[in-house]
Amino acid sequence: MKIGVFGTGVVGTTLASKLAALGHDVKLGARDASNVKARAWVEATGGKASAGTFADTAKFGEIVFNATSGLGSVEAIRAAGKENLRGKTLADVSNPLDFSKGMPPSVFTAAAGDSLGERIQAELPETHVVKTLNTINASLMVEPSRVKGETDVFVAGNDAGAKAQVSGILREFGWKSIVDVGGIQAARGLEAYVLFWLTVMTALKTSDFNIRIAQ
Amino acid sequence: MKIGVFGTGVVGTTLASKLAALGHDVKLGARDASNVKARAWVEATGGKASAGTFADTAKFGEIVFNATSGLGSVEAIRAAGKENLRGKTLADVSNPLDFSKGMPPSVFTAAAGDSLGERIQAELPETHVVKTLNTINASLMVEPSRVKGETDVFVAGNDAGAKAQVSGILREFGWKSIVDVGGIQAARGLEAYVLFWLTVMTALKTSDFNIRIAQ
Image (tube, rainbow over all chains, first blue to last red; front, side, top):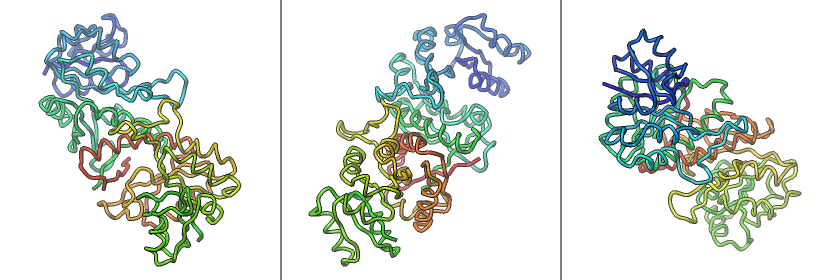
């Protein structure tokens, strides 16, 4: 499948590399087509994958992952162009974290009481936004067996078909327990979780952990 | 042990009943000594427990649980009197939820970026505040075996001795996996978790669930 990935940081390149390794045709998107990290990543794949602007990447992908930093996500989406994402699924992996005042970061959507997932959905009314994978580190996203036992990953979005499509890719990554937590408004809960995640990460001194819900 | 419990709602009376059943000498605290729910609860214990004002309850307890609603917690602590809680441990079970605009509630500390646990600690500089039990429903707090397998409960606070004291009571409740997530500032993560908890509760249509962290 043709998959676009926005973001050249650890999350974006980890997702893009895994998707390419799974045999997908991947394009990595950045603000500028000349982005050095994107070019280096393409070279590391032996030229099997490609890179481009956010707009190039949006046009290219049948499905697109947003793995840009939270503070830059809405700007990246606007640069991508809503016409290039119309009718497609956007898997939003970002977190609304502001590290500008140091650690711990603040959640910049907290005062407004909404979520970045909802803001992105509002920017893209004709795109099916699915919030997912934002509750774990990049390595775990694509290799859930790094932690013991079966743990949970979440999907939230307004379109059942888009959630099924994203869940298909999550299963390719190795996820077995995919918990559908509802519409895109549920991104509020998934994003608020990140402050809990940071607290646990600080206490455990590792980011290689995840949770399993027990009933 | 003499234990005070602030709050006559479901959480307060559930904790107070369990503590009394475990053989502790329990006093349930409310704003007014004539509180109808507190009186009814005392009668239900066959007069083995007692009730009183927040100040009476603070004086009485060697350890005190705060199970008032989040919006009323700081006021309850002020009514209790910091002199009555000096040198003691206060286990803070509250969540900073504002239901005044309906569901889903908002977290009223979110804009300030702090936590109710920290606000209570700031009110009581000579008391050892331990944030705990706010990540589960009242029934599970005192009966962790309601969910399958072993799940986690958390403690956060600045005083190791106070966390050990609270952990002792958690073990009496049946908790085996008690995760120390650090100082009282970690209450930010434990309280932010509640928005995640609400999201999962809505999706699962039950509040009888908890998480297990896997590494």
